Image (cartoon, rainbow, N blue to C red; front, side, top):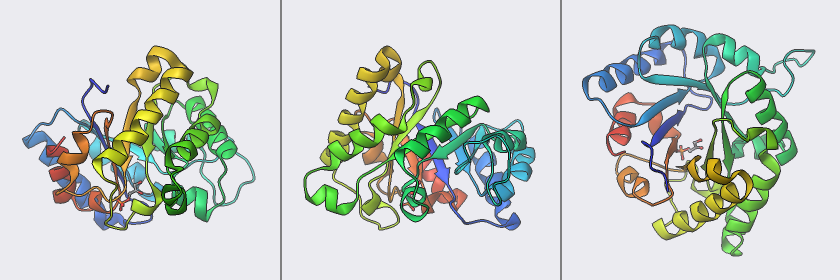
Length: 249
Ligand code: 13P
């Protein structure tokens, strides 16, 4: 059971130019004026991280990247290392998002190597898993997620701070969410895997739900027993919506 305050993280994906930094200012001001017990993070595009870190200094909003390379540096044109993210002021990184897995061919083994890299750079990983619609329809949601977890979580995570995000692929950006029972079943399965693998630590790891979380469904989703927070895409882009979700936590 998640006894700690919920963790609400925003994933801006490939959205946001400098002008969007205003939304971070509104978010930080909103949290200052209406304190929430929730832990709050935003993962903007890497191009905005350094400016965002400067702007958010002293605020409650933590920053994260959306991916990293597994090497610290090298001839990897276009890639960004965990060390580089940390150097901007980021403290977290989303790894294994389904858009990386599907559109960039990331395997569980690659995700696991990136998690090791994030720990090397002292970034806290948010490791994403989630089934495709065909898996769900075939009744294989939990086994698919269990398999992803087994291969995406390196042993190095023992003793480290990390979160897992359950994001059913078919719920991302679709406006469709699983039922509360469906979310509860997969979160329970994730908790069992985490406990078996990491013992007491595994009992405390936050398991976030992601996929079409909006102001009007956040409270219901966040009430589910093993849901320890949310990973929010589209609704994290506008500070007003994100603040409503945080208020529901
Ligand atoms: P949406 O909230 O836009 O469905 O995106 C979820 C997601 O992919 C967060 O990582």
